[in-house]
Every structure is written in structure tokens, then in C-alpha cells.
Length: 395
Image (cartoon, rainbow, N blue to C red):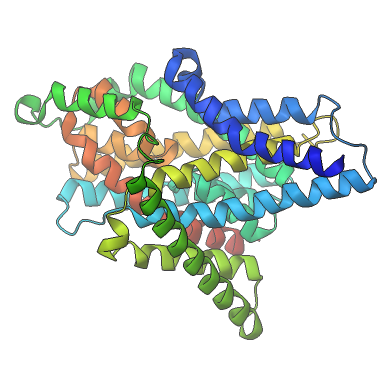
């Protein structure tokens, strides 16, 4: 009976993201909420329905082992998949490079400035600062990786990521409603006559609405997926070996060295053209993140969860995002970076690259599409390093 329950639950974990993604493509309200937040809601509901076995029983122990297996496996599989397909361009424009560098600095400064104000009210403040540094430069996958690197409990990750989604959504609404217009009054505006291509923005928005997994189950899609998965297992295995080796000669935990090695090797592997050119890598990696989200949410017993400091965490996040945006705009003023590039860089870091097409459409400026996505690549690559570094410096 226990085995059957575990099999059914494992199937739920693997198939729930597919159902949620279908909802997001079909219904506007679901797309507005987003798949990760919907999966959090779904996982939390399952966790608190009373269908799981009572604590300290054989069934509960078996369930916990399965859930830990899922959470420990999904992030190491997701990171290489997502990084394999990214392109790093050498000849970027001056404004893009400045916006990219100043954006990273703005996030780090905002975290460092807010930490003395909020740390005394937030449990495990150095870990929280490190995880949010990773998230605000990269995304959810970076926060999850740094969470594992630092040994943070899954319940803490659920709280922090939920707070981030609430605050970041508020930030996104502000940018679309007021931020773009304010930035264009404060900063230089490049003429949009040549760059303005409404058709290009529309194509990018339509692309974002398409099913990214269409064709995955064809012979070509399966071949690409198997090659990517095989390369991922090699990268994970080598990273584990490096992690074990470094713990023998340097202070620090295995998970910290493992994820830093995993990030580095994944970036290096993205320069291998036969691997880089495979389709579906990023989207398969995101599917692993979706599975991770519903599993980790289903482990959160809301009645037993420590919610102390949540309002302070939200305050810390608001502070970081406001300061980060302010510094980004001031830097753009100093270096004469145009308004749209500055704003798209801030959105890319704080909200992650998938939101770039939406903001480009709000700007009616297709010129910022590729710079925004390229800056996001750097954020994904740098997030794990910066998150661990900030935690170590503040801890």
C-alpha cells in the first residue's frame, strides 16, 4: 500500500507541472499568476489536506525520503540544462555592458545596505541575504541552488520564494504602470524610429505564449533530450567529484563546492556547439524547477511552519528592489545609458529573463529584447557565485 501511494504521489509531482502549464496557456488569469506560484499553491494544498501519513511512521519516513530525493535531484539537473543553451555574445553595445555591470553592482549594494537594517529581525539573515542576492541577479533556480549550497531548510525556501513572487509582481506592475514613463523623463531616450518594430515585439510575445515542449516527443526531440540529459549527468558527476575533493583540502561544505563547480562546468559546456545547439534544454530545465516547486511546497506544513519575520522579509525585499532600481537609474544617468536599456536590465535581474518580452511590449521597443535576454544570461551565470559569497561575507 505504501509503495502504491508513493508511486501515485511521484506521478502527481511529475505531471502536475504539465497541467499547470496547460492552464497558463489557456487562461489569462493563470498566466498572470504564473506556473511557479500556482504550483506552490497546489503543493501547499496537498500538504495540508491531511492525506499524508502521520509523522514518525514508516509511511511518513518513506514519503520524506522520496520528497528529499526529488528536491535534491531537480536543481542539479536543472542548472546544466538551462545553461547549456545560452549564448554569450562578445560584441555587445556600450549601453548594454554598462547596464549589465551596474545592475549587478546595484543588487549587491542594495543587499549590503539593507542587511544592517533588517538582519536583526530575520532568522538566518546571512542565508536569506545570500539566497536573495542569487535570486535578484538570476532567478528561482539560483535561489534554490544557493539554498541547497547553504543548507537552508526547504520550509525557509518556500517562505522566501513566496515573498519574492509577491514583491516582484508588485515591482513589475509598478514598472509597467509608471516606471517606464518616469525613466524616460529622467534618462536619455534613443529614437525609436529605427528600432521600433512592433511586429518584432509581437512575434516575441507570441513565441512566449507557444508551448515550448511541442515536438519534444518526436524522434528528433527525444534524441536532443537524451543527449542533453547524458551531458547533464556527466557534469553533475564531475561536479560531485570536485565537491568531494575540495572539502578534503579547503574549509566549506560539499554542497557549496558542488553547486559552484556545477555552474562553472555548465557555463563551459555551453561553448560546445553540438551541445549548445540542441533544442529544449532550457525548457526541460524549467520543468525540473516546476517539479521542485510543487514538491517543496508539499513538504511545507503551514501549521508547523515558522513564519516569524515574514513582514520583515517582505520589507527587506522591497528595500532591495527599490534601492537596486534607484542605483540602476542613477548609474544610467551618470554614464548616459538610455532609459529603456536601464529599465530592461533592472527587470531582467529582479524579475528574471522570461519577463523581458512583456516589458519590451510595454515599451513598444524591440531593440531591448536581445540586450535584456543577454543580461539575463549573465545573471543566471553569476547568481550562484554572488549568493554564496554574500552569505560568507555577512555570516
